[in-house]
Image (tube, rainbow, N blue to C red; front, side, top):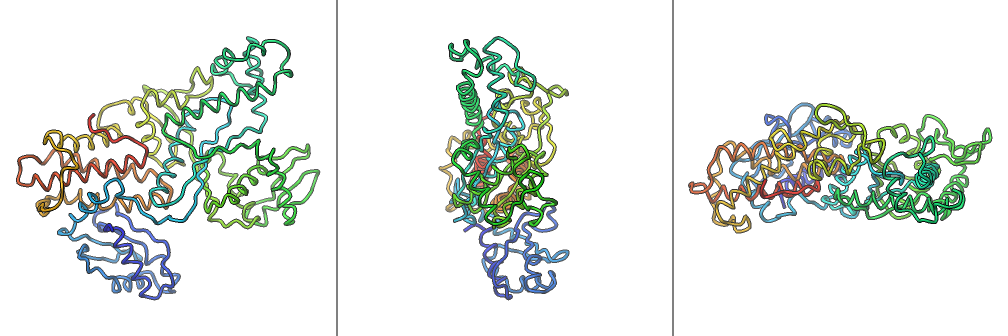
Length: 538
């Protein structure tokens, strides 16, 4: 059990001792300001309403009830309205090294989500063209969330929802037909060179006859080819999906109609003005929403409701949808619709992702010849590398504006965040190359770890000890950028330690080799969590 897990368990026991019927979800994380301790918790604040007491009073009761006999805590302080700050005992800090070496590539993992089945649906691009950089950011974010949940014990399914039932598929087929005929696509069609490539590989029979003769085959061929390319790009980007769900199949299988029937049976729909409406205003939406328009066509809401009913039918406890920020206004109506069907609010979760502005040489890059409209994901990762692309996409909150600087991502300088982190890992590995030893050959038994007493070494130990808490908090908030921020901080400390201290041939050699091995392991774990390589050489 790691220090983080021991302290979490101790706080839980203390909460029960002071009268809590159960332990509510609470945070345990590393404060930004070292003056606020090495670890801090908000447990008193979340317990106070349940115990009908003031947070600071609850904090005092918690501290009095805490069993800290393991000796890892030097001091405990109560701050502000009731935060509890823990200061680790320096003599005990080195115990994290034992935890890391014993756990290896499992250090930072936990089982807090065991038994919880989660569906993470992301990218979900129309099968009409190459993936653009915005899709890439969504892919990195969705996969990052899925990895965090897996690291904390959840059972995760990555899912791609194929929007293959709309009018855009007809436009795709018509655009391909035009290219086969040697013409420009129609107004509102698709103009990228990828359709020229598809036309060159088309069935020779399609050069004869009319569009109507081949429409069905054209649609099938175009969608299949585009989807295959999207899958290939995502695989190259280290994103693999467990399920691909077709919107068209929801219609063909009768699931959309079944959803409409279910809503009607529960008296949740009504006819007005020739349209079919859903009573979402009764469940938190600002107004009722149209399911079927006057012309008889269904709005996007109908298949989306059917799709989420399907997720519930597949026994998912939580559905996380990664949507473009332009869908922000759609969240309320979907949540209201699912409430109407009895789904708890905890089931439906949306993470928003903003589009990406790509800059090269200080100028915005707006177009790819191949797509005809936008910079493709393939363009980007082939130029900067998959590691850099994934890391850059994950450096910021998904719903924040982001400028992707191609020149910075390609540079081999300390200003490049991913290069900076990977170089810190490579430097730790380099110590073992010079020593002509493998990291795995360095054992902790019999090593005097009290030799690690310099402030820079204590800071490194505290940072290493914080990793499990950072992972747990990042999974709870579904924010992979917390991991990149942690790695950046660890790299800063590791570089400073590497430049200041010699390892080999020094009295502290054995202890410092253990420290270097532990730092290297945490870099490897953190980067693996992001789907990024941890190179031994740069």
